[in-house]
Amino acid sequence: MVLQEAFQNNFYIDLLAVQDATVYGIDLEDLFDPEHQPGELLSIFISKEWDDLFLLLDGDSMEINSLCDQWDDRIRVFSIINRNSDAVKKLQYNIVQLIVYSGDTPDKSREGNLVMSRKIILKGDLSDRSHIIIDDDEAIELPFHMISADAFTPDAAQTQKLRKLLPEDDTLLTLMKKPLEKVTRRKGEKGNWVQPLNYEEQHFKMIKEWLEK
Image 1 (cartoon, rainbow, N blue to C red):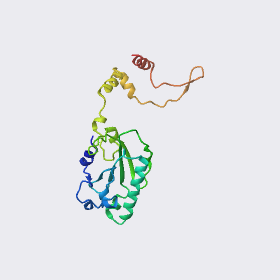
Image 2 (cartoon, rainbow, N blue to C red; image 1 turned 60 degrees about the horizontal axis):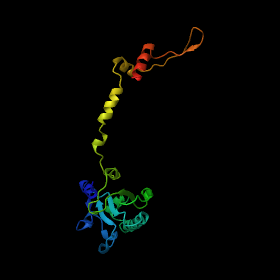
Image 3 (cartoon, rainbow, N blue to C red; image 1 turned 180 degrees about the vertical axis):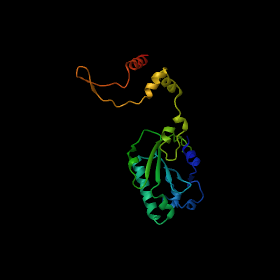
Image 4 (cartoon, rainbow, N blue to C red; image 1 turned 90 degrees about the vertical axis):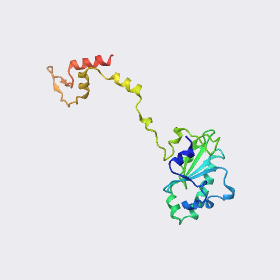
């Protein structure tokens, strides 16, 4: 899937593509110098409720830890400058660094570091940075990604195999549904203790024949 289209389909707005981001309560000048936009910054998506902010970053541009540290510093300054802004207060715990890489798997331990921002690190095709392609198994990391209902559809072949394992004899099916009763041991004719059985001998014979098929 195309990452940017996924955001658009979920009604996110790219603040880098609008004429004035302050309409959404965000002054981009508090994040970076507009005349020198960081090369690793691809998009800034804000949700339609203005309660989620995703910084889409190129993970191939530099080492992951350096990238995360630089943007945590930017977010820290941004939060301090706008500490009295109602719009930014709404985003305080919902700013995400969404980092996409295309090469070797980087150190993903930073995903567990929630200081200043959450980090999500995904593998994708960055050959066209305006149309980043990611696989579905990567897309499930996105909070808004919906898993297709087809993923939960039973496998027809496996279902048929399971059906063949069920006994054809209705008596056996009845036995499978029979609740087991608690039984009490009793003394046999020779004085030894005997454990009564829930099933009769012919029932065990039927079950044995079914299992040997």
